[in-house]
Each structure stands twice: as C-alpha cells, then as structure tokens.
Length: 447
Image (cartoon, rainbow, N blue to C red):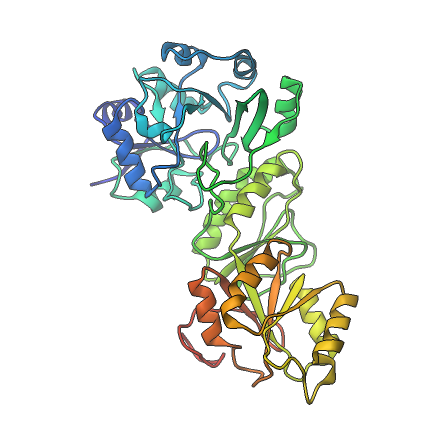
C-alpha cells in the first residue's frame, strides 16, 4: 500500500467513508482517524497502533451541535467549557452514544469528545456524516507525532493517506476533564492549563491517579516514550558524549554535539510546541540515551511534566569504588544527582580503603544527604530498587571492588534488564555507559 501525503480533503472523505484509516492534523498532535460509528474501522485503528482494547479513544466532532446530533445530554458545566474552548485542545468525558462503535469506549459508561481547531480537519469534519475516532498517530506508548513526516515514519505503507496540515501548533495533547460524584476530575493535563479550567468552573480540579484500567486515553504509567532510554528530572543534565541533552532554555557556555533547548526564552508554550519534535530528533541522533532537564510543573508545565514523567525509563546506576578517594566518589554521586545508594556487597567493608567500609560509608552518605541501604541478596534486589525509586529519582548500586575498567556485575545487570530496568554504569573516571550487552565485556570492546 502506498501512503500518500497531501492536503486532499475529498480523498480523505472517500477513504474514511470506505472504513479506511487516515492520519489527520490537529492543533495538538496528528491523529489516526477512522469512522467512529464503524466497528470494523475502529478495529483497524487498534490493530495499527497495537493499542490495548482497554484503552478508550477520543471521538472528534466538528462542534457542540454535533454532540447533540448524537443524542447526548450535555451537562451545564460541559456546555460552559465548550462555549469557551471549542474548537480547541479540550476533551470532555460525556455519556455514551449508541451510535458510536462499542470499542471506542473500551466498555466504559462514558466517551471522550473533542472538537479539533485545525482548519484542515474542521473542513474534513464538515464533509463527513459521522464523527472520527482518532488517537495519536503513533504505535502505542511511543512519542506522539507533530508533523506528517513523523506519521509517515511510523505508518508508511500501512495507511493510504496522511493529511498534511504542517507542524502542530500546540504540540501536546488535549486536556481531559470529567465529573465523578459531583467533583471535577483532571484526567490528563494538556494544552489548556488547569488554572484556565478552574477559573471557568469556579472549582478546583481533582487528579485521578494512574491505574491499570484507564477511564480516558493517556492514563497508562508508561507512555509517550521515544525508542531510546529517556531519563527525566535532572536539575542539570550531565554533559555525556553518548547522550542527547534536552534543556528547557539554552544553557550558557555548554558545547555539545547533541544539545537541544525546548524554548529560546524559556516559555512553556514554546516548550510544548517543540517537545515531541525534539524527542523525534533525539531518536534519530547517533546517541544511546536522552537526558532531560526538570520542567516546572505549574501552568502548561504540568502537561509537559506529565508527558516526560511517563516517558521516563525506570533506570538504575551502578558504581564501583575501586581506589577512589571519598571526595572523588562523592563528586561522581553528585554529578549524577544520586539520591540513594544500595550496597550489594556481601561483606560491606574495604580492607584497603577504610572509608568504603559500611559504617564510615553510611555516615558520610548521611552527611551528604544520600540515603543508604544494604541489600546483599540478589533475589531481593529488584524489589529494593523499585521501592527506592518510588522515593528517589536516581538510585545507584554499589558493587564490589574490582578492576576499574570493567563494567560492574554484568550478570546482575542482565538480570535487572530482564526485570524491566535500564542500567547505566558510572565509569571510574566519570561518564555513563548504557548496559546493553548480554555478557560481560571490557569497556573498550565493541558490542
């Protein structure tokens, strides 16, 4: 199948009426659209994205009148939000319509609706006699597309048409709002900030925590992720030669081949517009992983923080003390913003370097504000690390003394990889090495 990229709305209308899937532009991200009233067409979307059947889709309509045509009783609070933010990047959780294919709601009693503001998609909806089910046009869990090129990279020769509307203006998904038991719920922060919604409703929004059974799209804990491991939340990302680095605004005096800033002047609106495009560029670069600076979590930053938090890889570091002085060792921990150290040595003392014996080490770490835990049992290590990562962003494993230029505990690192961890080794002289070898290799060897 050839995938055409064009602005041919008539062709899109004909394909959608024939139950085909077409990629469409919106002001947020590109969507993978199908006739929302056709079970066969909706099933194609789930299959193309490899999307779990438990994850509901958003129904795209031209305006508020289209909701009434579906026979849906719209509550007053929703009408108020529609009048101010539709068309636009706001999704509302409303009662189901029997006209919509049952797969769209994933068996839930409500449906998510929005009216996209992109002029090309507005024109398309005006020529259709049915609404569109349109999740983001990417394989499930991966980075959302904000250009036609991103979509083509994902689905070339799998869909017949991509409507090319240029780069998405907002660049981040819609905000999702609903009501439960008289309380207004923010299911997903997005391109319209919490503060804007609260001002209109006159009430605070409550946040629904992530669960294994989502009530709306975008609620899975792991989502929006690039192909490479992404480590989010750095106060200052370390300058690593084999990493793509992302800062909110351009850092002064840094020289790096793969340095990115989300906004020239540090504005969150510009950062939202460029976030996904930047992640796509990082995936194309000859680097091994992506390090992203912490984003302020207020205003529009709440949505950016949410996306990057979900894209963040569950990662741990390893370090071996060799013959480091305490100052050198602490400098490495601080460089990588380590919050907790898990000591896996069966006999936690050092014959040759006394400050790495358990007592002095624990005392020095406490003075440095770094938590310490001893876990010599390999079977319990994954649980210990998972628990530590709930409290600390960066956790390091302290391995036994050994040759300073060999990766530490490669067999153990392989096991942690199988448990779903990304493992990065802190080299004795500084620098990170992504663990991806199935057997122990010297650091100088090629994989």
